[in-house]
Structure formats: structure tokens, C-alpha cells
Length: 75
Image 1 (tube, rainbow, N blue to C red):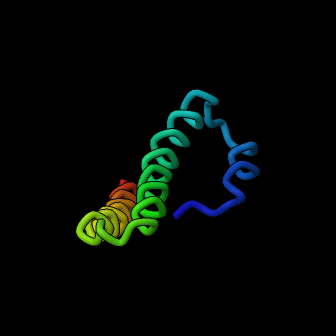
Image 2 (tube, one colour):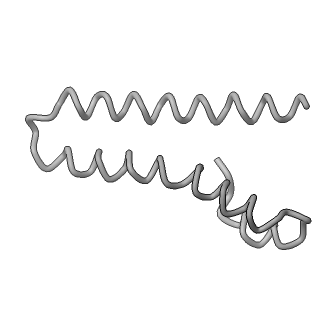
């Protein structure tokens, strides 16, 4: 996970605005949809399987982030 002070720290780098916006969109929007769907699923308890699917998606997202972080650290 990226710390909340990412916005401040990127101001001291040569990161392009385009790259920042693309990274923000790709990093925040998908997980936001998962959180919204998970919250909506808790309203109706008939969606237990869907809730488990969303939790599995969250876990997979976490491990994908760990993999990408370790992959980028090697290069």
C-alpha cells in the first residue's frame, strides 16, 4: 500500500502529471468499486457468495500489490 503522503512526496520528484493520474486511476478506482460493492452486499444478506467473492478479490488485490512491489524492487 502506498502511504497517504504520496501526493506530497511526488511533488519532489520528476514524475509526470500524466503518469501520476494514470497510476492514481489504475490504483484507486478498481479497489473503490470493490469496496462499494462489498458495502452494498452487506445490505442484503442473500449475497453471501458474492461477499465471499469480493473478499477473495480484495485478498488477491493485496497479493498482487505485494508481488508488483517486490518485482519493482528487483529492477
